[in-house]
Amino acid sequence: MIPSVPIATDNIYKFLALFGLVIMISWVVAMLYLVKIIYEFGVENINEYELLKVKTDLTQAESIRKDSLEQIMKLRTLGTKVFVWPLNILFVVGVGICYWGFRSWYKKVQPKQDKLLDLQIQKTEREIQVLEKQLEKKDTK
Image (cartoon, rainbow, N blue to C red; front, side, top):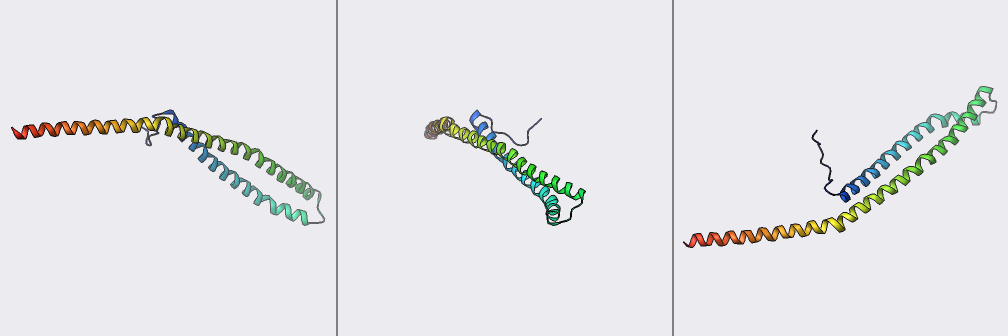
């Protein structure tokens, strides 16, 4: 199987930095989904709850429905807290992994790659000088 998008895994630090970015993007998607679900759930039930709260003479079924909607609202608030805290912790972990990966890559790997590139440039320049000298010798003959 040929991957369509190459993943930069030439060193562990770059991989960790990208993994941290993926965690942060996943956090954004999860939070948007959570907000959407909570909003849709609230819109469906809040109108009915408010109508039952205002109504003075409730039947037994309406009273039970009002109580159940109150419990649902409490559970919705609790559920939001239960899902948001782990997601926030995951985001902080993602930021930490991303920061550590990029920092380590920049401090440990990138200077060596820069030095190697400089040496390759010097080597190529010297090879060009040698080739130019050889061409001059051939032209003078």
